[in-house]
Image (cartoon, rainbow, N blue to C red; front, side):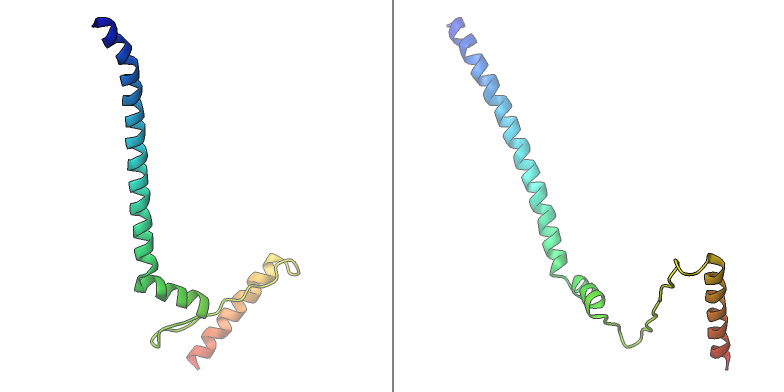
Length: 99
């Protein structure tokens, strides 16, 4: 009887380890499933739809103002010239606002 218990002990230990491994995989799958459910919920939300419309269709609300920012070609001008140009354009813009 003692030999029988010893011979059964090794397979039981292996089954126990395999059960723990399977339980860990189940927990990982449930966590991934929950994350996917949250992502799915966000992708069907109004906030996501509004963000995509703003990004892809350049939508703005009627009470918002749009601002366009242009990049100056840096390779053809020195940094000082670019800064002077930017400051002069900003000062001109403020002068036009006051008139």
